[in-house]
Image 1 (cartoon, rainbow, N blue to C red):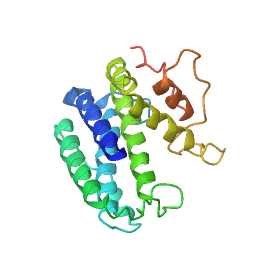
Image 2: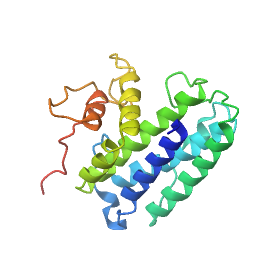
Image 3: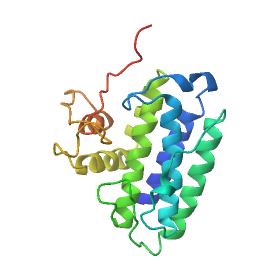
Length: 205
């Protein structure tokens, strides 16, 4: 399976998770810093928009990467923006031109395949953030780990994310690398590499 096919698969798995979000759940906390579920989904839809613009040849314009309101239809906003991104990547793939990603380190340009890998990682990790906020991450983790190519790509990209002190400082996209549980599968190991706590749960009320 090609990288683009794996990326499309990651978006579909993520969309299935987001389909379960109800409007009243948008206030829930997530494992992604102090972001609520609404803030996380608005960021995710904004990333779809930014990556699609980059695939279309946009330069390092941060205005194209702002969060996009999801209002009362997070699943619709997610699926619509994901479909636009999938189409943009498909058009850009034959050229394989580097993409400007102004939110990542120095902004690039980054090789096309690396940019797709970045977004695949972002998609699956944020899908996990949503799933664990809803209290049901096991199905997503199982679906990824049942696909060795997808799980291997996720783990490889996570392992390539810079992990120096400056890269994992407060306010950065990922926290310091955590020790993975000995029994962790590839998804759990990828989360640990990115500083996520696989045991995160909603605060007790």
